[in-house]
Amino acid sequence: MSAPTLASFDATAAWQLSEQVSLRDESFGALAYHHGNRRLVFLKSRELVEVVRALSGHESARATVAALVPELQRSNYEAALASLAVSDVLNVR
Image 1 (tube, rainbow, N blue to C red):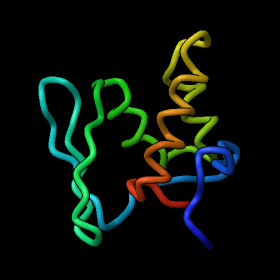
Image 2: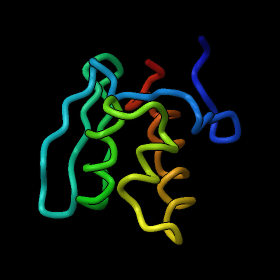
Image 3: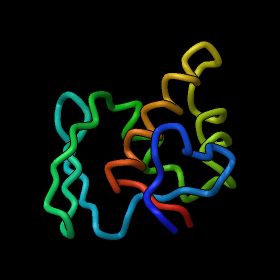
């Protein structure tokens, strides 16, 4: 499967934190380090970190967001997950 783009991110698919990514908790959220491409990505809220860590326990990214995020903020979190997928922090299960 080719890398997703922001426009092609499928929130109805089952996503997970990439096995090549390590998260390090920080006061602002977390640092995500990709051991394959050596990219460092900032997750700028603890709530986003919680959503990312919970992805593998839900049937889809959208279900994860629905379970953890207030309704008015859900589109912002789906956009953040799309960005993380483009950065190879997340991959489809």
